[in-house]
Image (cartoon, rainbow, N blue to C red; front, side, top):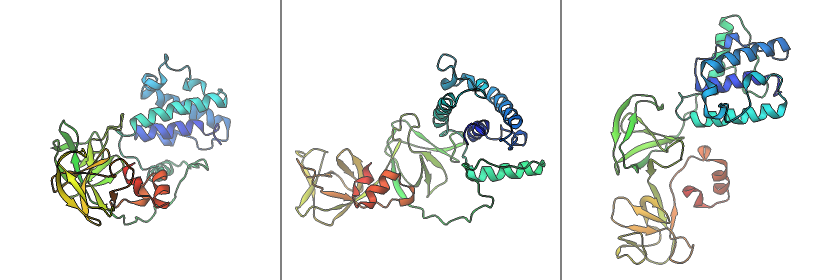
Amino acid sequence: QFEVPFPILILTILDAIYTRRVKWREVDFRYQYRRSLMANYSVAERIWGEVNMEKAKEFRFECTQLRLENMAEAPIKDKLAFMRLLRRWYEHRCYTADPYEPLARRREIVAQCLAWGHSVQFPPWIRHDKEEPEQKIERVIKDTWRVLSKAPIAVLSAKNANSEVIAEKKYGETFRGHMDGDWVMLVDEPGWIVRVVAETREKIVEKQETFRVVTRQVTCSRTAPRHEAAPVAKKKFGDIVNGYVYGDWVELAGEEGYMDIFAPGTRARVLETCTVEDYHKMPEYKRLIWFLGSPDYQHM
């Protein structure tokens, strides 16, 4: 199930980055036959050369001895190692590639091949929906965001790093938007903004959070994120505040001051987040923590 359709798997990954480069009508999906398997290796090797994969950092001669032209006769251990390198290559490039929806792309491949008189039979472990599913109406959560980057950031016309720059946002500027993966779609104006640096995961913009005061004791906001700083305003149990997380502090929005999330010298909570987050878009670990009833997942 892995070795026989191996060249098809390579072509699928290349197709996700180099859209339209792979001519799927040349691929023989009768991969259980050796003649078809070798023909598919030839297609993969040609595309591999056309996009100069040997010059990619992961596949340079000084970095690895694994070569695609040797994979047809290579043992399973080498194929797995080769696929790990290809996965690393893909993860470094997927953020700047054109948007890729795998199920829609596979339906497109089937339609193109049928037009040329070729049938397509994907491996059983590659998911393929023959019919386009009904579009679900998705709840859009609109948040307030603030620019963290000292340098101006581009507002792009589409969810694509290579799309046209239509505006820019400067440090400290706020805007309304809906988070979609590593992107924020602006809701009061057209455009998309990248949320994090792909290589370092450093935040470019930060989301405004909503908090509730959960301590029974009267607490205060302060002029600086230090307990010895001068108090600004008193806050009591049940009060709602908005702000941006700054370590264990919240920089308040709409009013002056900072508030500590925890009581001084303890981990007893003063503030508890009540920001709405889409459960279905949380990572698995956040879903588990959410299910167990802890609010801490909002800060992870």
